[in-house]
Image (cartoon, rainbow, N blue to C red; front, side, top):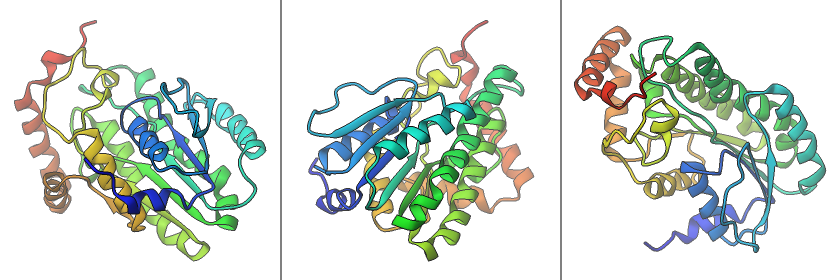
Length: 272
């Protein structure tokens, strides 16, 4: 598939690109598109594991960071302030996140609390530490939320709630930031072919259909280029999001529980 040149020009407009969790999944595909664009920007990945196969032509730096730890985030921003260019627009992509499946508090309270830290607190903390710099230089914040954020989702209750927070926070931040030259977008994918299932507690792929990661990222980058406040990649996902967001929340939760039960996802869950 031919890449869209307007996306390449959009990515070339930044002097600094910071992404979290680019070692796999959506984050790795975003990094591949950044690499393909030929940008001269300094690119930084913040995660515990460095991505593989990075071209030497990319001005790339991996900064090891456990995003569930506030002290790690504060330390990595100190490093960023030393390394990133002094001028030019900044793109911050808060991509890191993971899920959980099962009746609360499954798969365990430690997993659940760490998920809240990574999915919600870390994006707020990292963005806050970079916010003044972004306001002075201009740029964009892209937060990877989820289609699940549009309704209460039983058996993934805490995960969906973290993504609802990220969705609403992103849209509000966009309204605040535009006066200072900083836009914000909530990217809300439906099911995507990544290693999400493993992190959510499944021992193998559920085999459920979904977008390819390439298609998801392509649509997301188009929306980022257009400075949209939110995007649900995939027309079927957009239709589902439109409908579910308009149902009374108790009804949406009951329907969601019935639909998830019919998928019989328990058969994929790792046994203790």
